[in-house]
Length: 402
Image (cartoon, rainbow, N blue to C red; front, side, top):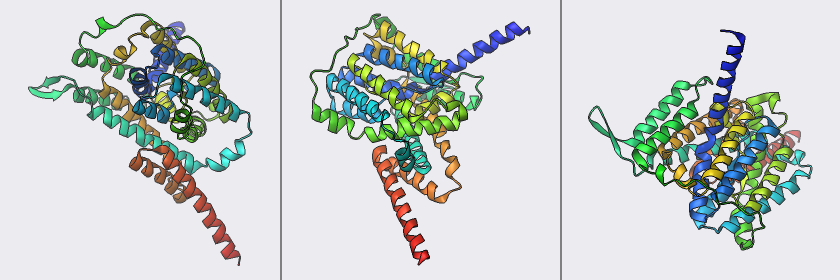
């Protein structure tokens, strides 16, 4: 093969891998985004346009597949309580101001003392637990699908799609030659068209509900500060900043030099101010999303540019019916993606296995997350265990000195 053709083929393979990797975190993004659109009446155009622009900016600035996700705890609580859209937007504005303020404070020493390796690995394990639980719920909770007959045996279509998706991912293994996420999402879309939402394509309306930039007016301060922000801020600092830096360094080594706590805080702060003014949902980065992008093939900022461009197009072209469009993808397939990312993310724990004390703290955080479903509580327990361990070591040292 001539050099020009070989280079062209290599370029095409790179584009496909980056696109596949960029789509690897959709299973985290889509359910919360759709929930905020359907329940809280947040503008779909605002959500996808702002997330898309942040994805593009993150890809260009960090030059790595840094993810963009909804603030998980905030979004889940907002959906559960049906918080009005203006309060959701106000939360983004306040979060933006807070992280911009934090970015100018020298926090490196504090972060190093608080977020030690076992704490970070525990946060990563806890997030892996939540991803696996969410994936299992989506796989086994998929409803409304028809049955298919295989060898005369009727089987739920969701189970067949889930099994086929798992097979594609497992067969692709660690190879980047096969765009597993693209194949799986295509299967999910086809399955949705055939078994879930027949005729849904004809109901899609092209056109965006254009957002008008403004400060949120009708919002409740108590809800914003106490209900939506208080449980989220420490979790965002832990997962979206410290754990994302640690995960980037584990995967990319010196290639992650651009990913620093300060830059991530500036990114989060600027993005959430922008999002809040557009009436969108609060956004963050996240170590789980980084694992999703990496495991499905992404190795550069191109992944963010690709998925960001797709989000912008979706927001502008299908803002009026984006929930129906997203609903075409089978939840069972999204659940398999979450399961795979959760298991892959748990593997980051390997470097503390040889250190019993650190492993105990990390496992405790994971266990409490499994029991409570609340990573913030587990994080607090991890800090308590860490402080107790330090106090015990100091006491033991003094006793031996006597």
